[in-house]
Image (cartoon, rainbow over all chains, first blue to last red; front, side):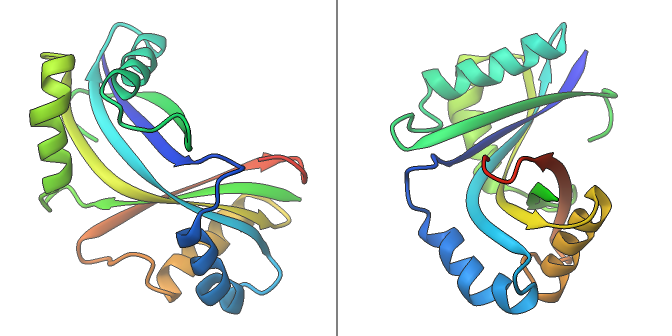
Length: 90
Length: 90
């Protein structure tokens, strides 16, 4: 079965995120004053993975990220989320 | 109520994504041979937004992205996803 898997890499809570801070201060706050408490900018890798279950797809993505150092566990955290898709579409 | 809103910006289907292609060819395919059909790399902005409903939170993020050109609709598509959070955590 085919899964669309999102692997999100963002800075941990305790790590500053200058890109997000700048975006919030100079772009977001003037457009949505008072509505946005925090903004963080990160990277996302979206993969189409062939796996037998949602759990296996997420596990493959998580192990890939760890083995190939797609993130740095000292400063980043990851979120992994798989969702079933038809084989032909996104 | 507080929502954690993910705003994902990735290249459209018809637009090449050299970063994703390189990641797939030189990193993913050797680790998970035959399992990953496609990889795309994008940007994600995670915001904490104060809104009265999930729909309003998503709508605010979408309008922010459009008004302030956080993406280029010619080459990018966006996904917006809000989820209720407690006011104090992430």
